[in-house]
Image (tube, rainbow, N blue to C red; front, side, top):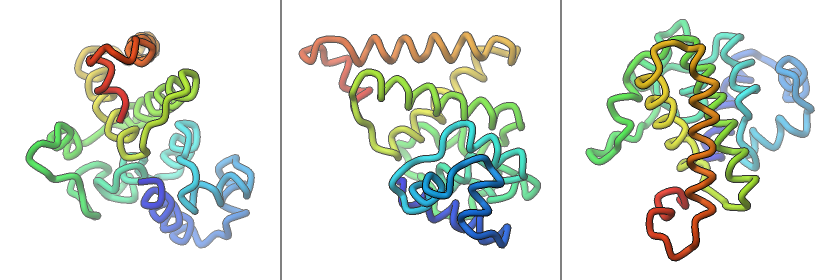
Amino acid sequence: MSKEVGERLRRVRKTCDLSQRKMALAIGLSAFAWQKIENGDSIPSGQTLMKLAENGFNPTWVLTGLGSMRLEDGGAQGPTEPTLETPSNPLKGFSNMPLREEDEKLLGRVLEALSKVYKETGFSISMSSLGEMALAKTKEIVEANENSSDWPGAINLMALQIKKELLKPASDTARSKFLA
């Protein structure tokens, strides 16, 4: 997935008609960090996704390829790239649901929290699984908390729950769902 994310970010940069260095400066990254993301060696942080959203680019599209590249083109409505349209995909309904700007920011914060949990616990997760989990957890948080002021607490609780599951003994089968 990280190669695909990198390709989509390359398209974003080309749309802006910027060099890698100028794009990195525009969103507050080093040229090296941007190159790593564009080459698929790294995934954009929640902060980077928020900065892209502030400039009109759809973070959901960047991470998953779902929806339009630009927010003004309809955000997460109607796919423009191949999508995860398998019948067993639990995100299918959510991926076609339009996200508000605050939901897009929440997705970035959830992605950042999940990345931090996996890094702190020493477990690895594929980029595609991380993106899918971030979308699913974002959906759960939005559905369970009508007031966006409750989201930071919900993100912290989610992170603690996942960390607890990851740190369970290896013999505990419930842990396997978090080890993608």
